Image 1 (spheres, rainbow, N blue to C red):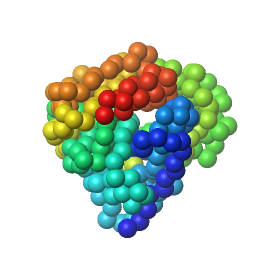
Image 2: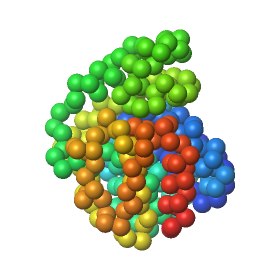
Image 3: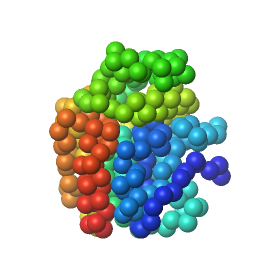
Image 4: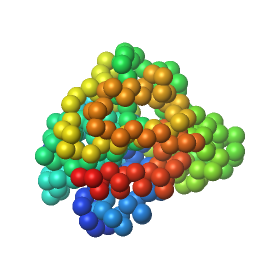
Length: 262
């Protein structure tokens, strides 16, 4: 079995953070210092993302990614853990809780994908264009993103607070997207699917969405009936598809509240 890149920090009950499609472990930089004061935080890169390889035949649908992540966590010595995930990572976290209720202690989904009544059957042109642009421009991102117009072009649709996002976060995100060999395989593996499984009421669940999520808009991709009825549903103001960038303190508080209920 190939091994995913991972890193551990802090102490306490283990908390796994799972990034989204075309992202990497660097997406969590703004919240890991505070979370690691309360938990042993584990960050990883999904297959074909960041520093993790993607061997041929790797199954990239959310359920399979969840199974792979649990297998890796057990390999690293974790039999039980909390999990928080963003976008695709949030969907994978829900799949993990549904399939392995004795392993997952709590779930915090940050703008989780998969909560749509009608699944998409083909790629969106805007998302594909973003990947191609990042693939071309990421080597010069440290220079380019110093300009306001470039930062707005790259992050204006992702975050209502794009102007105040730390430059390092933006550079990391551009590199992750530009080098992500798993981006399209993960996207294609989601087509025609949605999350609609039962999860034990013994597992605390919090779902967080920003009020300005242009990637997974409320009218199409935030169907509350698809998550278990015991889930807490929180909408964060002035926040987009990456709440841990726009509202890091609030996201930390919500994650810690969720883990404390287990």
